[in-house]
Length: 272
Ligand code: SIN
Ligand code: MN
View 1: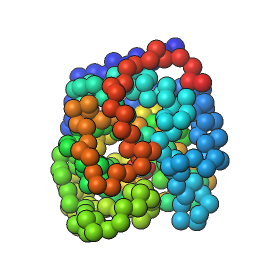
View 2: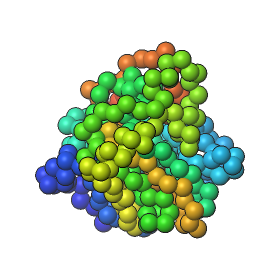
View 3: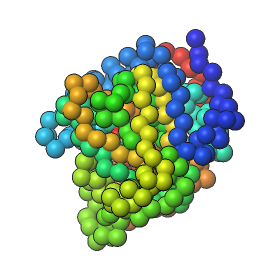
């Protein structure tokens, strides 16, 4: 049975207020199993955009899989993702980025506190944060396996990150945009102040749950020392009215898609 794609006025308001919207089990367990089989297969191949953890063994993340995998080419056009993305951004959208953060059992490492938009602005020249992340839980997210922490309401602020001022003179190494030693991160004072005002949430739920989060929502995650993997697929849609300016050192296509064709919804069918 196809899931309804209608998103309510209350859900949109909640997203606008907190920068977050969790929809439990938007994907069935069978659909998630198919996606995971593809992820598993890709993580054993040396695909472009694959990055390892510091141990040089554990796969940390895969990027740009929609550029070569039929499963992901279809998934980004699924109405249950695409329709709400267009509604939330108020325009047609194209795919900006797709990544899978694997956060492996025992070895999945930290994501320092940050806002995503600072990367897209500094590295890619994105004019405004008119982009949205849709994160699909490929495993259960629980208190043990390094769920993502968010500061609700933080998306309303544009914050200065460590590394931002120095970045003009540094070499552009794409791995520093996605490694545990993240190029831009927030200092402890900023995070403390925000958390004292607004608290922290860690959205949890069964595999198949979907979290919409704003491109300026402050987030990060702790290492996964549990025996449970915590795979997260994040699709970023950008408004077609928010095309990045060209930059001197363009990041690889697997990190920043430059096909600005508006996505049209597919009739949902079996993923593969
Ligand atoms: C995570 O996968 O824990 C963090 C995701 C992100 O920063 O985009
Ligand atoms: Mn992020």
